[in-house]
Structure formats: structure tokens, C-alpha cells
Length: 366
Image (cartoon, rainbow, N blue to C red; front, side, top):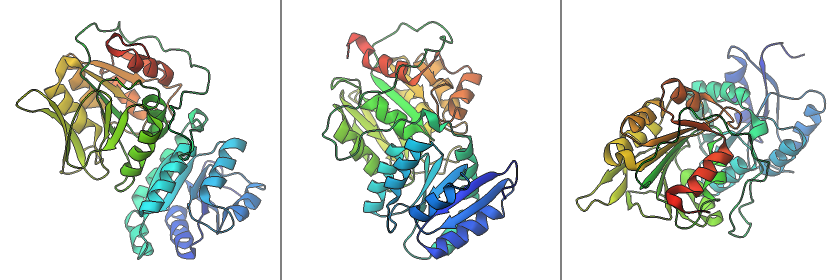
């Protein structure tokens, strides 16, 4: 029987070693109980008929049924926080991004070899991911377009959420030269909803989404295939032009600067994690405050923690327009909440209303 008050976790992975190590890590953590650890989704569904978990740790490539098919069944029947535990390969990265689009809340990577040592080394990260997932409002996750769908923009499918009351009146100002967006848990779906709804002439956009190395390229490729704007992962640097969105690569920071001719340049830099993250939203927002000032728009979306709050405040103080996603439409309200507490957000809006704001920037209707 389950212990009341504990986060109940179901592990679904065809590797006996992974099941054993994950069970040992999580069962030893305060406030977490491993209900079961099974080798495939068919066995998982049998266990879930008896007791439903609070969080599922799910592999992607498994026998009898793949993880994405299983995930879609879960999200259709009873939306539940799912963490993808995926191999760091090109194929694994693409499948994992598909899983995030299908409703998974986050990713934990695993190598092909020496899995036991790797998982033991990231035990704290694993426990943290489970605890964050347990707080996620997965009812806010929307089924997004399959990657194989033709490249047509994916518009929001649900009825618009009621707009939050503005924190203060909309700032009038210069035309927006750059939109800077930061997101974490739940952000992949939020970003897909926003970017795929934009017209081809949208202002340039710079994005930091907390995501492991190797996965951001697949995420950008997916968004590019679904959007009218161009979406790329920045490798070294890129000139920021209308109709382009750049995604920070996992494991590196992204900043924006002006070159000698006044062009905006997105460039990748190395450095230690900031607010425990790399890429960090704060790094991006601070650079935008310095380089773009009042001609920028900053948006902080769903995510756990406080990365981006201080940077958004710097953008606000530099005269930029700033928006935080509201609690009702956030999967995890941590990052927006911290920005609002600092007074960094001019306005607090639902995800649908943020999309409307972006589509209407500089007087261009969608």
C-alpha cells in the first residue's frame, strides 16, 4: 500500500539496471515512494489499473509499445506528470522532443554506457525533477501537432483563458526590435503555441528554454517545421532579423549584443551555470536590457525556480515592456511568480493573450 503524503512514482524502462538504480535513488529520498518499476508500457498499464501514480518516469524506446504511444494514451485518459528518461542520441533527442510535445513535463538524459554511475551522479537532479513534476498542472498541457504533420502553424485549440488583470497599464514606446523569452517546465509546449502562431514578419526572437544539451537542436527543428517564422538553434552567433527565432543551445548561455553597425547579434557563450541553469534566462535578459533597452519585449513563461526574474527586472528598469505568464495557464508558476514578486512584469497575461500580444507587435495584425 502507498504511504500517505508521499509522491508515488512509476518507473517504466526496459533496462533492468536503470530500473534498479532509479528505484534505489528515489526510494531513498524523503517524500517519494516507488510504486512499481516495470519493463514496458503494457505492464505499466496493468499496474495502473490497480493504483495510479503521481509521477511517471518513462523511457522512449521499449518493446511492445514505445514510450510516446504510451504517453499519449495517459494524457488522453488521465493527464499525469511524466518525466522522459532518454538516451542522448540524435534519434533519442528527436523522439524526446516529440514526447514533450505530447505532454511530458521534463527530460532526464542517460548515456548508452555506464548508466549506473551516471544515474547515481545525478541522483539529486532526479529527485528534484520528480518533486517539480509532482507540482505540475498538467491539465494546462495541450496535445500539440505530430512532427510528421505538414508545416502549417499550430494555433491554440482550447478556448481562450480569461485574461489576467494587467499589473499596470501597457507601456507605450518604441517599436519592438527584439522579443526575449525565457521558459522551463512546461515551456516547450508554451513556446510551440506562441511561435507557431506568429506571422512571417514578426520581430526577431531570442529564446532560452531549460533543456539538456543535444535536445535543443531537435526542438528548434520541430518548431521550424511547424512555424511561418524561421527557428534555429544558435551554434556560435546569428544576426537577429525579422522572421527569425533563435534557441539557446543546451549547455551554453545565450546573449544579445549590438555590433559596430548597430545590428543585433545573438551569440553563444560559455560560463558557469547561473541560478543552477545553463542556458540561463537571466543571462539572456540582462544582455537584452543592456543592448536593446526600451526597444525590447521580455516574456517569462512557465517554469520552476527564479531564473529570469532578476533579468526581467533589469529589462523593466531599462524601459523594456515586460510580461509574465499567469498562474492559470502555467504548468508551473514558479518563474513567473518570482518575476511578479520583484515587480519586474508590466503585465500578467494568459498564454493565449501573450500570443495575441506577439502577433500584434508594431501594429501588424496576425
